[in-house]
Image (cartoon, rainbow, N blue to C red; front, side, top):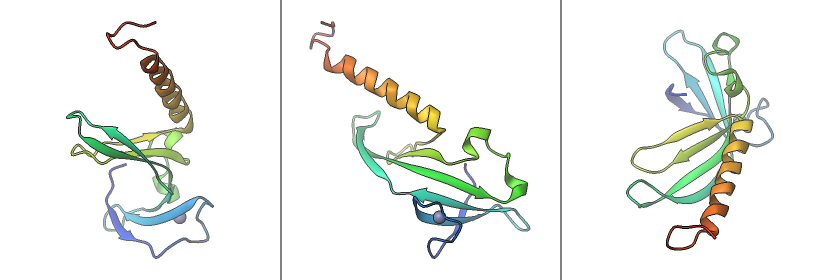
Length: 126
Ligand SMILES: [Zn+2]
C-alpha cells in the first residue's frame, strides 16, 4: 500500500487488535476515505543487500482497518491482517505477504538454508 500516512495516532484505540503496538491514521485526500494502520512489534533480521552491505529487515504483522468504501482496493488476502517485511536498504524494499505466502517463504528459506549448510565449500553438495 502506498497511500501517504498523514497523521500519527496518539496510541491504541478500542478497535486495535491485541497485537497492535503502533497505529497510524491515513487520509487519501480531501473528502477521502480513511483507514487506520495497525502494526505489531517488529522482529529484526540482519541481512546483506545487493552490495553486500549489512541491512536490517523488520518483520511484523500489519492490518489496514479501512472504511467500507475502501475495502477491495487491495488483493483480498491483504484485506485482513498480513505480514509486512521492510528492508532498511537504499532501495527501501517493502513486502506484504498473506499468512500463507509468509509460511511458503519461510519454508523456502529453511530449505535453501539447509542446502547452504550442507554444501561443500567448492560448490558441490555432499
Ligand atoms: Zn492499533
